[in-house]
Image 1 (cartoon, helix red, strand yellow):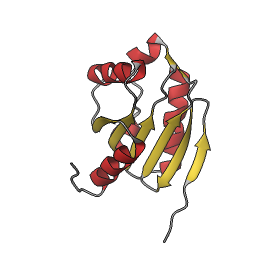
Image 2 (cartoon, helix red, strand yellow):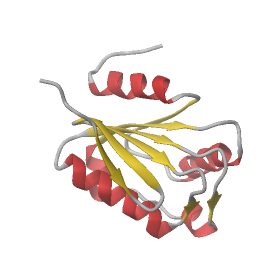
Image 3 (cartoon, one colour):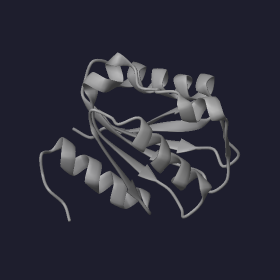
Image 4 (cartoon, helix red, strand yellow):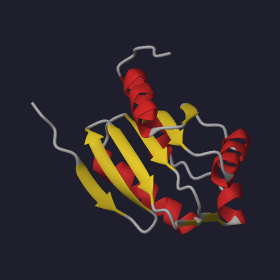
Length: 136
């Protein structure tokens, strides 16, 4: 059976459901990250995956803004903590990559988090985690 991707728009991002257990969150280039916007993205991810475990790829913009409250806040919900198996971040060598690294150092997750340079690498890594395979 072939699964057609679905797309879900939020204020900060478009979320692609690539397969039932893989989400790609493509943040808008001009995204201004705040607690409310991040909560909307998380709620959308939880809604479209239902009760299943899943992996997600967050493609961060090259430029964007993030407020201090968002950096200090732990955004994961109980549902996310229980169901996310792997989270790949895609980021260029810029401020948002550095801020994401700092955020996850201060807010360790119950699932694996890894940073990649391309969406393709990130998807392969997440799918391998979900399929219990190893990748280089």
